Amino acid sequence: MKHNTNSKIKRSVQMMHRGGGGGGGMNNACYIYDANLKANDTLVTPDVVYNRGIDMNIPLTMDDGKTVTMWGFTDGGGGMGGGGTFPSAAMRVTQGQIVHSVLSVNMMWAHTINHHGIEPGWESDGVGHISWDVRGNSFTYQWRPMHAGTYFYHCHTNTVLHAEMGMYGALIVDPPEGIGTLYENGPKYDLECFWVVDEIDSAWHTLSWTAGTCGADVGLNDLNPDYFVITGVDGSGTSAFGAAAISPTVRVGQKLLARYICAGYHPQRIRFGGLTGTVYMSDGRPLPNAIQATELRAHSAERYDVIFEPTEPGEYIIETDVIHWVSGEVLGTTYAKITVI
Ligand SMILES: [Cu+2]
Image (cartoon, rainbow, N blue to C red; front, side, top):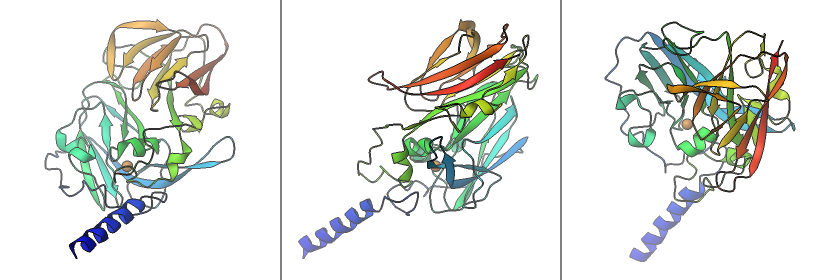
């Protein structure tokens, strides 16, 4: 009898493990860190409130006509109703403001928000497995950025998968001087662009939200990208040339700030197409001494703030290589463009 009972348990566990398939579909119970979810008892009156919901069915059409399903946050709360974008809508606040990010997860799948590089209290850190995930509920994260710069926010539930699925957005902190100054008493700029470079392994994009947390090897250690995107656009051709936020036009004499985020897992090398930029900041802090650069290398989640002051009209192609982290092979390249008139 005892032997039979054990066998039944084994079978039911195996069936649970097999339940991990299906595009964001099944309520697989292996990843449960929401049991401790409580209201955030640290909240004070905010200066800014962002409402974020979840959309786990965002179609991203690539240059070859194929569509990859992305996940992301909606701007304005809600649950399954759609309306999410890839990347998710930016958050933009001023240094010193108290901000509430209200995450509403009106579904059975768990998510969080981690404001990467910001330093809130632990209740608001949004790292699911060490505090709690949010599902079937809402939670208010409170944060107060004290350093201007370029950041991003992302889901921190089953992070390897959920970040790959696209659950991130830019987080910009302006100094007290406001938009047009990079950091407090720092350099000025006239316009800005956003280079958020990421690689996509479309085979991952049919996995369930708990994939890899149930003991099975679903291949999350083996990222084989087949698409390369820049700020939500297939970057392998010229598609990003038509988006002003990625491929700006600047007049001679103007200062262009490029906010570059390495949003992939493999390292990247970005080349400025013959332009020399001044690198003022990395990861939300000014460099001790700004450096002149014609290219940069970055690793996962790094950010760089680069100001260009082009002197010659022309078209400058910004190439970002995604480089295999072990072999050094260039896996793919994204293209953007600076037009100087
Ligand atoms: Cu998530």
